[in-house]
Amino acid sequence: MKAELLYGQRAAADYCDRSPAIDVSLTEEVALQNVQVHYALFEVPMQVTLECLPASLHPAIPAHLGMTFWRCDSGPLGAFECAWVGLACRTGIKPRHLIQAAYVTRADVGDWLQHRYGFDFQLADVHYRETYDRLQGRILHNGHTVLDTVTTQMQPVVGASAAVKYSPALNPARVNEQSLLVQMEASYAFKRVIRGTPQVLTFDAAALGDARIAPQYPMSGTHALVDITLHAPRFTADFTLPAEQGGAQKIAR
Amino acid sequence: MKFGLFYELSTPRPFTRETQKAVYENAIAQAVLADELGFSSVWCVEHHFLEEYSHASCPDMFLAAIARETTQIRLGFGIATCVPALHHPIRLAEKAAFLDMLSGGRVEFGTGRSSTWNELAGFNAGVDDTKRNWDEYCRVIPQMWMNERYGYAGTYHTMPERNVLPKPWQDPHPPLWVAVTGHGTELDAADRGMGALILSIADVERNIPRFEAYRERVKKCEPVGAFVNDQIAVANWLFCHQDGSYARQRGEEMVTIFGYMAGQTVEISEAYPASNYTAIGLLGSLRPDPHSAGEHKLPPSGLCFGDPATLIDTVRRWEAAGADQLLFMVQARETIAHEEVMDSLRLFAREVMPHFSAHRPARAAAVGAR
Image 1 (cartoon, chains in turn cyan, green):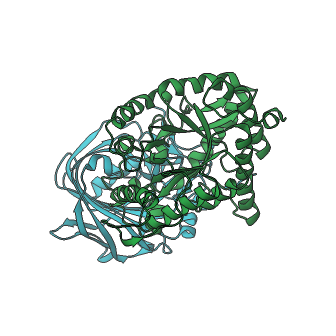
Image 2 (cartoon, chains in turn red, blue; image 1 turned 60 degrees about the vertical axis):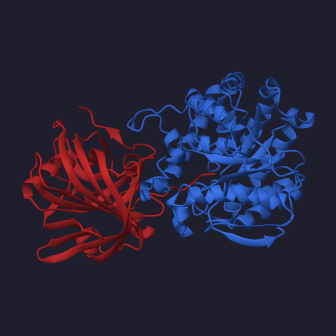
Image 3 (cartoon, each protein chain N blue to C red; image 1 turned 90 degrees about the vertical axis):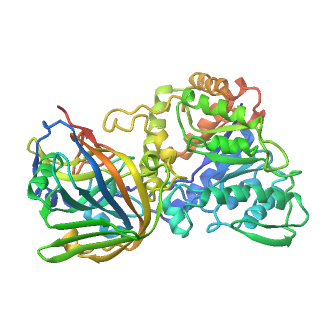
């Protein structure tokens, strides 16, 4: 029996137009200590997700998106906050998130992360705070709230290093003049993790990648105090070559 | 060593009525042939909402259909999901006993708790409690089978004294098993005197420490049932062909397709960080090196793809490692033609199974065919 496979449907040209160039020769690692990370997941409708993913990627079933906030108070990049929204996808077995929109509080940090991993950051007021009863992540862009999410009913997660798995970000980028999807490479040493139920208060879908995407069902929201090591990107994927024929390829250095 | 079949009932898109029916009918025909060939058991998973990967939402019905067309092959729940949002324990006790009665005492009762967000969220089940749910189920279900009347006040269910009917044909009850994917669950099985149904497909040698740990621990078990089911059954793949390279090529196709299908599901560990779900289920075993994407990934060494001589060696390695049974997945999304699957079973039964003493002798006509 010949099977139809479930792939994304978005044209590669849509991505190539907004692919920043990255420099894969930058291989030094950067360690960020005591970063506060908020990671909230919501299910989203499948058909819209398929229309947002390129033809090389499979969706996750159920389709879902992730909202990631980083609050870094010190370190080699200085103090900054950033956030991104990505759709869960697959190039093979490993879960990944195709980034739809990204915001950062400092242009130089945005440039640094873009040059490394292709994030197409916009400058904004990104604000993530853990309070006694909730986690609150907010993005204000040009005075307009594009994302406001809150996570409540928190509980500690025991054995966080094994329990928390962040799906790596995939960004469209130009590598050696070729437009590809580039995977962010980071490792995490967790110090403390709590988990709760996330809720979206404001979600400006157009400002977060596609006006048709709407979070529908909460999955989980976590806060982690974590040491992050940023590594040089190792994998890329094609926009059109099906995962079965291409998948994630190691970057030749 | 005993041999069984293990069904996910994966289904190719587009999901037409005809395709769905063919998947079920082909699997039943294979199980009927397996019964004639001397395979010991056929198992069926229970999964919900897992598009392509597994359309096996009602394993008890699938097994009942097989029961009435076979005479000896045992019928395994692989597994019954012991989570309140999916099943009340009384219903699982009833279904297993009913099937045991219809089949003349051929049920193997596998238990587990689901590992996907698709399923647990789909039924609005509490993720954090599934292991404790399962523990309660596997303690009360045998009591429902063994006692004329039984009532209990548990953490997740309470029932006044009732006569759960029917009782199983097997006396005192069917053998009990636990699905084992994450490391450590084999010890949960051993502590309760239950068989370990190893569903993580991995190299033979990587399994030896967990087999040894299970055997050691089960010696000191406190059985939840009336007897200790000191058994290790390991899920595996099978495609047997006289042309070993063709067998390996088709086998690797099945593993690749399985990875694609399983990869799209959302494991709990991806969706909902929880200390009772730190393993990545079946997927990890298909990925020898998580960072080797894009390079040629070798499948685990103990898969049964090859010519009969190769498979005799592979089965011997599993036997030496301590496995009592190998349970074979023989199809993935109907990628192998049904007749080729049937031929593979016949060849395996004719040329491999006789080398292992514990298998049930085949009926001559079935083995000799084709």
